[in-house]
Image (cartoon, rainbow, N blue to C red; front, side, top):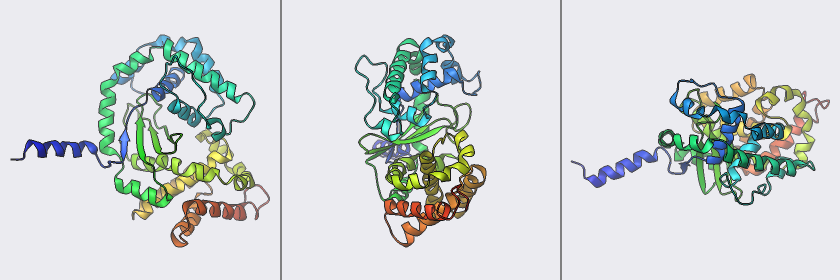
Length: 350
């Protein structure tokens, strides 16, 4: 008969799931943002579902004047910016001073003279909505549902082996990794970011299927994808001259990228390099079929035209020639320019 101590430690290990590195927590601010979006564009979930009933318990919130003002102010801003803004702000509502997080405008190329004021107004409206809507009541009512999702995601969390493969490929590691799920975010959305200190990588996760289902075949690839952004984005962004020199490559794919939420060449480059990691890491693990299927899907169905070339060059520089990831990205960008810009008429056609 096992001792109580043995059973206790067995339970601890079970609840740790696959990974001790990846923590799971909820963010009240991100759920507030998700609720605001839901009020304007409700997710397609079963209205008889208990969670849906709780989220829709206060239809009067959809008539709040600040809600319409917020949609007007935020209409030109990318969701990734809005998610990171809410992630970095102190919990709302707040009676203290609410400032635009340092460096955030520059990161998202919000350099227009009125961008600072626009975001300041947006923060004020979000704080007002936190005070005037019934969001806090809904948040409290969903505590048990959040607890269940958290326990499920702890069990599903990526293994330490996968996280080690990512750290090895990108040549970097973070002190902490976390998944922030949201019951209120629209189905299928996900975001990858890191804290201002650059010590923590975060994966913001919506339900993967309608009716608040977080577990399906996409989860592992999505984990590699969204945790890839904190590794990739800053490395790509350092190549300012090469980004400018390859700007014309956006034109041939712009019409396909914009509906997916990638409105400029920089965000499109982020996605190409993150998806390259999503292709390469399963290959490193020996899952060649999955790697090939991911690349084919992104190239044929999502119009990531330059992905096969980027995957090929990154693998060459990173594994054969043993360059650092940062050096490999720079060299790949140079090759991208030489192949698609220098050997073209400026329209991205080879």
